[in-house]
Image (cartoon, rainbow, N blue to C red):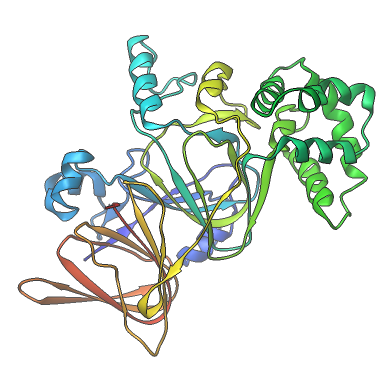
Length: 402
């Protein structure tokens, strides 16, 4: 068992207080958007007091995470565990599937586009399924709403029909997939119908922000997004998506091809360790409409809400169809001993709250190691160690999927 320290990421959309509070630090006013625990080269976790980068350490100790992982994932952790805290909306984005990632990466390499170039779409040959587990109330957008419902919501705003007509026309006259694709791609054009409708939509939404129902939530989202991204017609693309509010403990899974964005809240994100993000709006970064059209699923898709299944001694499992990771939440209580899930892989454990003792035993010598965990403490539990948790609090455990 080895102590881990993650890497903080100070993006503008981050919260100045949420992650420092979890880590037991005094906020300094700077936004902290993410806290990374993994081997990602952009911010590898470090081990122990000497701060050895985890990626370097695993190359020297390949048996820690499992032989199969070394073969399939080049000796790196195939997942990245994050704390994510959003005070402002993130960009609209989607991730390619594995085939798209491999083909796109090879094609852009052949074209001689540097991997770190702003116009690069595929930075590695991997897909990037991800899950966010809410720690606070967490708002996100995920998947295109049924176009008939989207049309109804826009019409209920009572915006200027002369302006709105051309924008809404595909939703009224086309079949489902064509309508969603046409309206979405129009929202990326600086002089398209969406750009002309934007001001009227936001102005009309202001009149409905106090409505208590779905229309009110729709209007508040429009006004909120306009506050952060004024005069950006891709705001209207965001309004075509399902608005999701997760309660603490609930999770949202995002497979390939699903347009999504995180709006506000704090959560645990676990993702395949890839940098492939194809952006679709609400951003100043590169947007490639042609690649988006290939990657996105232009079909209505309900949000993939995951509610964990409870096992023995307060162990809750989030079961999603990915090879890169398995995810558990463990609620530790004073009257029981909780077992860290045993797998034939190494595991990363992150304490979120509480006063916890973790005891790991290494077979066959049965050598015990005890560590005390407070909020924000993290451990790497190697292959071959079993571990138990006592005290009170909540931890997250992630291992390579099986």
